[in-house]
Amino acid sequence: MNSFDNSLALKNICVIRLSALGDCCHALAVVQNLRKQLPEANITWIIGKTEYQLVDQIPNIQFIVIDKSKLFKSLKTVFMELRNITFDVLLNMHASMSANLVSLMVSSKRKIGYDKARARDLQNIFCHQSIPSKNNQHVLDGMLEFSKIIGIDCEKPEWNLPICKKARTAMNSYINLDQVTCVISPCSSQRYGDKYNRSWPIDHYIEVINHLITIKVQVIITGGNTAIEQKYSKSISNAFPDQITNLIGKSSIKELAAIISLSDFVISPDSGPVHIATTVNTPVIGLYAMSNPLRSGPYNSQKWVIDAYEESLSVFMNTQIQNVKWGQKIKHPKAMHLILPKTVIHSINQLIAAL
Image 1: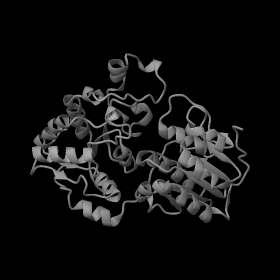
Image 2: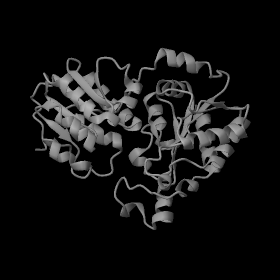
Image 3: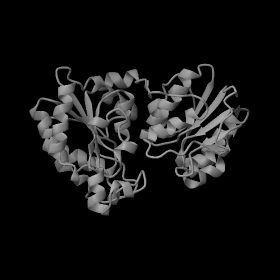
Image 4: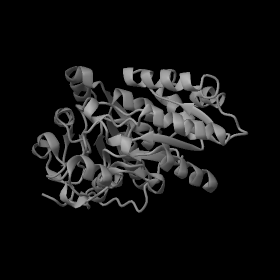
């Protein structure tokens, strides 16, 4: 079944998107559009523990928080909280086995998942119907198909991410109002190991930061506590001991969102901060060589993306973009080296001129 009975009054809607930060930023646009166009509906979002920290202050949405490290305990929590509710529709915007199991705990008249091409981990078995199959969509545009299939259109995605007042106050103390401020989130996750390390080389960042300092731009670096982030933190701080603000390993997700919202622009590889910046309307210079930015790049900052993806396909896979599936990742440790500092510096100069 690929159509939805739009005459059905949508009073209770459930959304599943557990992770990751970037994908939950995309899902946020869908959820807030539903909230805007269906003001009387009850909307429940089942979300991961880490990602909830970013969106927990959004009004008029009920959240059920999943700890994927304690999945079966979390499944019981979902069941107990929802045992007396039958939803008009479940929008399962997360194609994973964890999300599939969560969906079993949700009673719904209709359960909608991805089309066959995108329904990983047998998601289609757990759903009654699927969104239309469309080629070459941005991840966010794919998620927007979930609202369209229930008759809720969205001409242009919008976000309204509330920034925690305490976090904003804490981060505001780092901002020099007399300077343009650039937040650099230098690292990306290493879910697939060193062969899929989407972080740009340290020496490239140092060259770019040196340029930023030369043109009187305030530089703030951010990140978590992983080994690679601490390595980048140490190397960059050693290069600029008194000239940058280093918040790597020192800020929460709420504070990350706050500092990004207070900055003038962000530089980052394909990672959560790229998409957090989109939710708070901060321009992003995205560094993309291992994934296609037209699929997963910053939605509103495509013109600032440094795109070495096609070159990377040619160099490391000996092929061209028209010959690979949409979403093909390039797992080569040298791919990010194709992005040159001078290219990023040129984009920085253009962006600052446009501020």
